[in-house]
Image 1 (cartoon, helix red, strand yellow):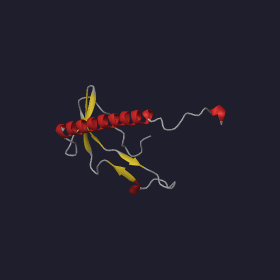
Image 2 (cartoon, rainbow, N blue to C red; image 1 turned 45 degrees about the vertical axis):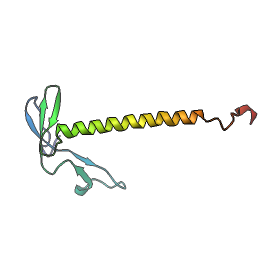
Image 3 (cartoon, rainbow, N blue to C red; image 1 turned 120 degrees about the vertical axis):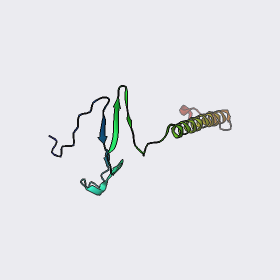
Image 4 (cartoon, rainbow, N blue to C red; image 1 turned 30 degrees about the vertical axis):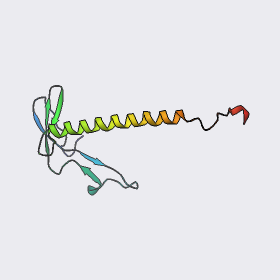
Length: 105
């Protein structure tokens, strides 16, 4: 049962107030007010639309900044992949250490 009346019913197409908090227990201590992290001290409007949901408000990023972040992460991923292939190739081409079978040890 919801003693604090915090449960809400959501309808597609309506805007509802939303807040979320994350509690991380340290040293086995029980929950206390200053021991959690939250999105915001205020309620955030949450719009439910058919096929997805969006958070609106002043704290959300614009589309152009998300595009730049996606492009940067894609570039970083490609560079990391190419670097790992190069390092794997270089390591596999080194034959300085002779192969020794386990049965001869």
